[in-house]
Length: 465
Image (tube, rainbow, N blue to C red; front, side, top):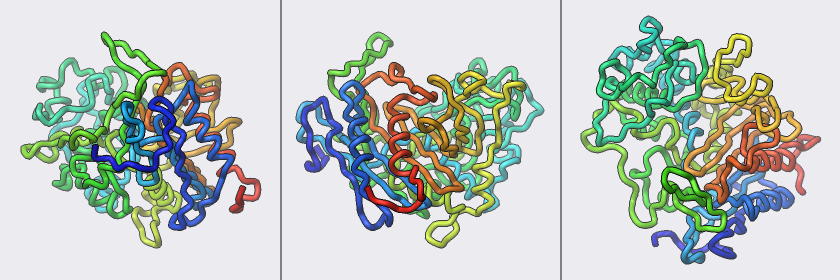
């Protein structure tokens, strides 16, 4: 076992969320003890009927980090609980679709460098004609890809392994080896006219980024985003050093798959889903033969980034400060505005998007470039409301994959924001739906607790509980 022992307060192999690391380190500037919030979050993570393998949270108020805490375990040893390792502020997670927002930062950096144009035909960058064959005259742009209005669909898949030797030209072009029946293309709606959330567009975006720079996507992102923002982690765990691998959270669920069916076992062991490197290193996602600019899906621009809540807090502060980081410009204010302003808004009369809910309380109301605009619409189990009773209109992204659920949501004007990352559920989330939104109930509880205790301060001044 390569994980170090320690930081463990484990009661059993089944209930694992009782160890909390509440950080008050001075390097975050304004952290405050919030015992009521810590107690409430611990209760959520340890809920016997709805336990979480781990939970990492961070809250920003008035542009300052005011609270950070972790609960539970980044690595769980069911057979020998004392060897389990608690999550801490260095723990980073496979952040699922929050990765799309991180990838967007890379795109905007390349736009500012003059290597990309948000409204140009991406065919020019890809080196082949990239068209929905049902609408051959309609160009597809980065702005469309990043706002989910490109007419791409996930029905034909969105990831092709290195061993297949895939060139995306053979995926998207009729007659290509991987085109199949063209399920990746909307047959009835032209590019730019209809919203459909999808992951496939981000593989295309990653490929475009490779083509215009000549760099592999994961290494490009490290150079132009992660290192400038001083973020640990990244899109390719096979390149992580030993310390970074040790800090990578394993994701879990308490479920097995039997004959194609999910069977949840709340009283059973935590079952590894992804990122267990206790018995061996991660496998490279690309071989030495990979040709840069042919298949950016390899590196998961849509969902494969590993980051901690603390590092996501750095990203959030940069966005709140309109692209500035410690007095230096990472992105221009114009780029931040372009990212965050809605490129698509739901219109029930025009029926211009799949909002995955009812017109009265859509899950998707507006979308910028690589981020959702949460408009505070609510109904029973539907809508994009983030806190009980409403009042928090925000930009950001949600994540849900391999057991992890996550949120990165912020009000850029008030400079208030919340981040949470979970290491996986010990229950079927589909049976624990939200009361006032399309979120799962445990997500509602986490965000609402953070909002009430860390953000909703009447005087808007730093106070201690």
